[in-house]
Length: 247
Length: 247
Image 1 (cartoon, each protein chain N blue to C red):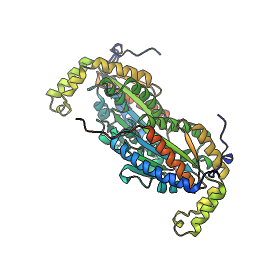
Image 2 (cartoon, rainbow over the protein chains, first blue to last red):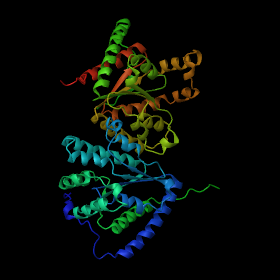
Image 3 (cartoon, each protein chain N blue to C red):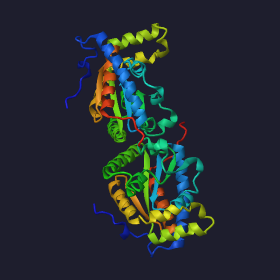
Image 4 (spheres, chains in turn red, yellow):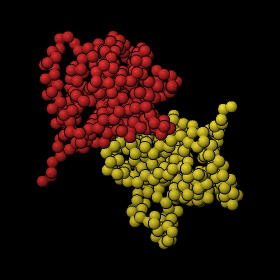
């Protein structure tokens, strides 16, 4: 497999795609998604795990808010992975992640995930290369365990350009409804862009047994469309049915 | 690797071994084990997971009581795996197991374990052969994840003879301090002896990447000696040290 070079992959919506048409299509997809989740919840045979990974300000929060807003909250959970606690650090890196795996009938969203353990930890050299390799393997096996338990695992790499990131980080300093996200450290992490890019390229290549989707996220309407479309697609593929009362 | 035939492996202490000498040696080992666990707790670099698997009345409870009695309860946990709850059943079979993995500094005992998911479930045909094979793989990977997090995984197969089992099950009907363990279902399960034996033989062969120890358990004093000896051996091998204050 040829190695992915992220700087050569577009972060923008293709020009030929019409924005307002696409937004309309997204609306339809969201309705469909809500219907599909109702059947999933009723049938209790499958679950969906959506993993959102990307640089700071790549639009993860927006996806959660905009793509999954139509779904009955009883059937969906969001978990944001933060800096591990002391208790979590005293276990293997997948310990806290496995606990958040979805039960049958549910959609689970991971805002960041176990991939942080081969991204931030690697970029800052908190772990050595051998550990990185071993973790790639562990992640591949872990995702297979979830898959064999009828969990569909969708992994979205939120692909943002450095320019768009800067624009969004600046907004966090100036717009009142964005300020709560402001973290001076983000500007520091931004300086490590090419290290992160390299770490992501390895992840996209080495942890692709459950395949990644690369989502261009400079245009919010386009990323929302792509993610909604993919979710509807895989959920439709499950051929779920409402259980009926036997007569 | 030649297939293990359990009916050809002795369940008894070798005749040449002296009982009272061995018991004395076990006492010394238990003291050593308690000391080793103190260092483990202080150092917080390693953990020990002891998995006890075996037929009913193969002596699992006795091991927990007799081999680990000298250890400071602050540094050891015992978890008994029972029939999965509804919530546990709605997740993959390793979900509940992973949660009970030891944190660094601790000894964790599993009284039964994830192996039930390829034993009782298989013998009663609640799962098909493909699932069994996939679970073998998942178990192997899962144990590797624990090992790469500095957890020593010790797996003891408690090897009891059908005669000894019967004797012990009978005691549960007659001895007051044993009656709480009485379960009429045990006599039913006993009828499936050869199915269980076959399932165990496969487990011992297919899930041996983290190796099994076969422990003859007809003689309690001998099983206690073997397990204490093994635990001391592996813990010594960790070359643990009390952390000191830097001057």
